[in-house]
Length: 235
Length: 387
Image (cartoon, rainbow over all chains, first blue to last red; front, side):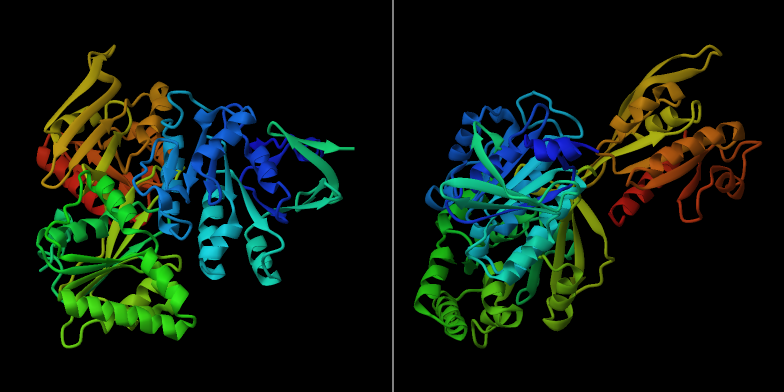
C-alpha cells in the first residue's frame, strides 16, 4: 500500500506517512495558519498529484501558494468555489475548474470526479506522467465555509461520498475545520468521517499540533513551523 | 409532449414528456449529468414555451455561461419566454423573511406571481436548496401551487445524497411521473456515466441503464468497447471480421500454416443510435500482458472458444479467471458448435467452471447473424448490468 510522506519525522519514521485511503481532519482555531499546514501536507511529491477544493481563496492564489513552496504546478488541480460568483464567465482549464459557489455540491462533485478521471487517464499534466495508479492528495479548504452554506446533515452526506471515493482511489484527504465556530455535534459528526485528527493551537505566537488516530504516533503537543511547504517540528 | 432535447430519451419516453408531468433528474454525486436538465430547458426555449427557471445556487449569468459551455453554443434568450429566479433572489428572501414559514410564503408568492403574469407552462428548478430550506414536502408544494387551475410541467434537478430511498419517495409519496437517475462509475473502474428511467407513469418501460457520453453538447448513448478474447485458434479474428462493418486483423502465418493474431483485431459496428467497437486480443499466453490495457474502458468481454477443441478449455478457463477480477460482464461464445466432435453446452459449462447465469452462445463465428446475436444480447446485458 502506498504511503504519503508528511515530512514530519514523528509520523514518517513511525509508519512511513499517511496510509493510502486516510482522511484527516485538521481542527484549528482561526488565524492559526492551519491552511499553510494543510497545503504543506498535500504538497505533491514526485509522481504524485494534489487537488484543492478552495472555498476561501481563488484558484490563482492557491496555485501561487504551491509554487512558492516549490511544488510543480502541473501536478496541482484546483476546484475554485468563489471566483465564479464575481466572474461568471470564467472558463475551466485542465487543472483549474470553477463552480458557482460553495453551495453548489453538484458542481463540486462533478468537477472532482472529472479531475480524478483526467489524472487516471494520464491527461492532467501536459504529458508529464506521474506514478500509476496515481497517488492523489486532496484538500478541502475549508469544511467551515461549506458548513456556512449547507446544512450539517447535507454536508455530512456529501463528505461521506467524497471520503469514500478518496479511499477507493487510495488517495489521502485533508479537511480543514475551524475548531471554535461549531458546536460539539458538528465536530463529532465531521470527525466520524475521518481516520485521523490533527489538532492545531497557537500559544504565545508558537504553533502546536497534536496527531490523534495514527497507531504508534504520539499524541503529544508538538511545536511546529512551516516554511516553503515543509513542516518542521521544533524540539 | 415536451421534448427532453435528448433523442434517445425522447424515443424511450414515447416522444417526450406529457404536459403537466412532474419530472425529476436525480443526480448521484459526481455524475456528469447536468446536461439533462439543460437540454430540456433549451428544448423548451426553442419551442418558445413560457417557463420559469429557479436557480437558488447560482446567478443567471453563471448559469447561462455554464449552459452554453455544456451545450457548445450561446443561449438565445431573444424569444423572452423565460423568467429566472436565482441566488440573488434567494439571498433577498433569506434577508427579508426571518423565519422558515415566512420564507416559504415569500417563495410561493414570487413563484405564483411570475407564473400567473407570464403564463408559465414549465417550471425548471434546481431543487437542492429549496429542499434544504423548506424540506421535501414544502419545497415541492412551493412549485405545485404555483398556478391555480393550471398545472404547469415541473422539471427538477436534484443532487441525491440519500440514494434509492429518496428516489422511492419522489415516486410513491409525491407521484412523480418521470424519474431519471443519473449515475457514474468512479476510478479505478473506468469512468462512464449512465442514466436509468426509474419510473414513467404514462407507459411501461423495462428498467434499464443506458451508458452515455457527452458529445458536441449532446447526450448520446455509448457502448465504448467490447473485447473479444479466447484461446489461440478459437475463431476470435473470424468473429471480429464477421461481426464488423469494417475492421482489420494483424495476423501472421503460424508454423503449422494457420494464421495467428500477433497484435489485435479491430472492428466497428454501426448501430442505429450508437457504434460498437470490437477489440480482439491475441490468444497466446505471451500476449496476456496486453489484455489489461485492452480491457481499459471495455464494457463487456466475449470469450470465444472452439467447441471442438476441449484441450483448449483450460486456457479459456484461465482467461475467464483473469476476467473475473474485472468488473465487467463476460459472455461465452462456443464456436463451431455445429461441427463433429463439438462439446455440448453442459460439458462446456462444466469444463470452464462457469455458473448457469453466465450467458453462453453456440455459434458459428463465420455467420454474421450468430455474432450479431451475441453482441446484441451483450449490449442489452450491458445496459442493464448493475455496476
